[in-house]
Amino acid sequence: MVNNADHMARPPDALDAAQVLEYLQAHPDFFEQHPEILEFIQIPHATGGAISLIQRQVHWLKEKNHELERKLLALLALARENQALSHRMHRLALHMMQADTLEALLQLIHEQLRNEFRADYITLRLLDLPKLPTAFVLSQDDPLLQHFASLFSSRQSQCGRLPQTRLELLFGAEDALTVATSVVVPLLHQERTLGLLALGSRDETRFQPGMGTLFLDYLGEIISHALAHRLQTP
Image (cartoon, rainbow, N blue to C red; front, side, top):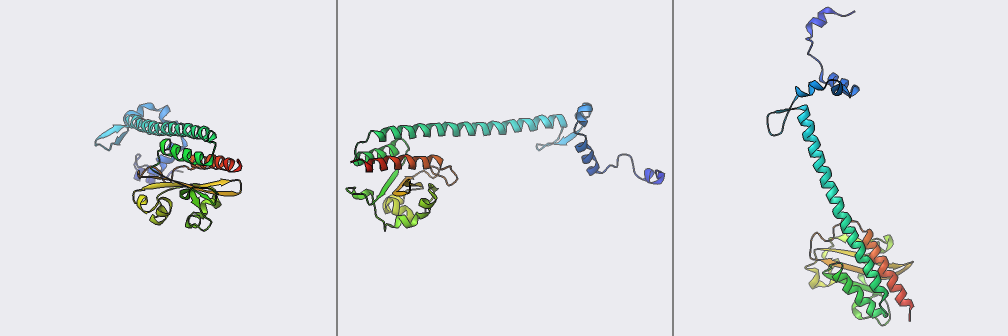
C-alpha cells in the first residue's frame, strides 16, 4: 500500500540521478523512442553556453572521426616507411650476392648502410677472422662482447641512447661525442657468433627505444648469412 504522506513529501521530479542512469542503461533505446526530447536536453559546452544533446553527439562524432583520421594517417605513414625499408633490405641482399671477396663484401655493407639506411656512423666488428683489416677485428677478450653480452643471448637488436662509455667502445671517443642515438645488431649464424654491427646517428629521433626491431633483426640475419657464406667460400 502506498504511503500517501511519503508520496506528498517527495515531489514528482525528485528523482535520484543514479535511478535515472540505471533506467537509461536498462533502456538504451529510450531516445530512439522519444527523439523529441533530444532537442530540449541542454549540455554545457567547453566554450561556454549550452548545446542540445544532438549537437553534443554530432560534436563528439566529429572529434572521434578526426581521431580515427589521425590514427589512419599514422598507420599509412608507418606502412610506407616499412615498405621503403623492405625495399632497401632487398637491394642490400641483392648487392651482397655480387660481392666475390670478403673485403668487397665488407666495403659493400658499409656503403649500403651509409647510403640506403642513412647511418652517420657505422661499426662492423667480426670475431678473429684471418686476413681481416684491423678496423673490423673483434677479439674474444674485447670489452664489447662483455658490454653487449645480452644481445647475443637474446639474439635481438638494441636501439636508443647508450651510455657514453659504450658509444666510445663502438664508435671511438671523438665520434661518440656526436652520436645521439644508435642501434647495435648481433651478427649470428646458427650457433656461431660472428660479431656485431652498430649504426650511429646525430639525429635524436632516428633510433628510439620503443621502435620495433624486427627489420633490424632481419638486417642482422641477412648480413650474417652473407658473411658466413663468404667465410666458407675460398
